[in-house]
Length: 378
Image 1: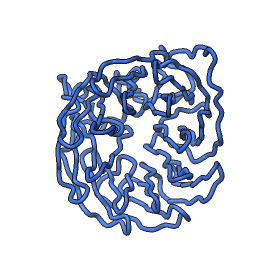
Image 2: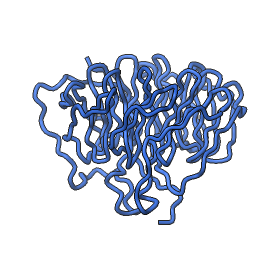
Image 3: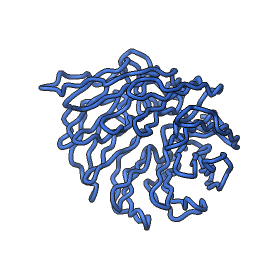
Image 4: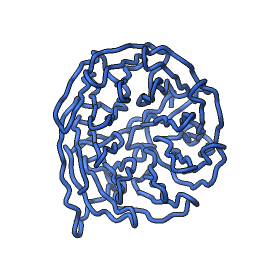
């Protein structure tokens, strides 16, 4: 297999057998996909509003939430800000986007391969442009006076929010293969957390870019490069003194957030990542099974097997529920106590490939065909 990067997106569990079938986005039902069973006394779900942006075309594009606004874009470079479903502004970046959207109180940031573009969050006016060496591979993290970027598979760069000037860069060894999926950075106090190939999670000083600590989410195993892939995926999740992360072909592991010492680890492979609340960690495994683990010990609490091979996405904690999207555009609502599916609603029929995003009172779903849906659980 001659690829340096293995482009496996969202539906990777169905595609490990051959490089020619790494993604599925068709309308047909893959063999073995779980059929959706009728629900007993389901939740009454409805969309608050829905809009449209350009198609994603398998790019790593996510919507961003800023106050009451939702900002989203398609691969063609058109960026739109919505409020209550109404378009506030739309701008054309004039480039095909490969990652985004990152946003803060004053700034919207997107990436077109190695070019980073910033816009005013209120008006959409262009502010600055910065060219980097290497392709931006995940959504930018806009945080105060800095913008943090994953560049390629092994570098994190900090830019000044005011003008895009580079402040520092953190570099690791480039892996022979890496998993191309949604892989975000997290900021907590003076630390920036990021996961890498080889199952490594790092804490970096936000001031200097220096390594503070490094922990092992999982250890690579196997004889071939493909078998030894153990990339940390999704975003690290912080709850109290714990920081939890997950890896492909590896484990879910929780660390002491200040020391980097592993508190517990549990064998569970995911290509989409995790979420957590104060008592549980929620993960979707390679087959689409949703798991709940005790956040203090890693003990299994429940698992929901009714979404097997449906391209089930990253779990999202929403009050008393867990919400996941799938490859046919369904949004499924699970009871957080026992994992029962208690509601579902369909979007536009295309895959919900981007992670669901929390709003103040609900969630936002972005589909592969560019549908943007606001759902509130009442």
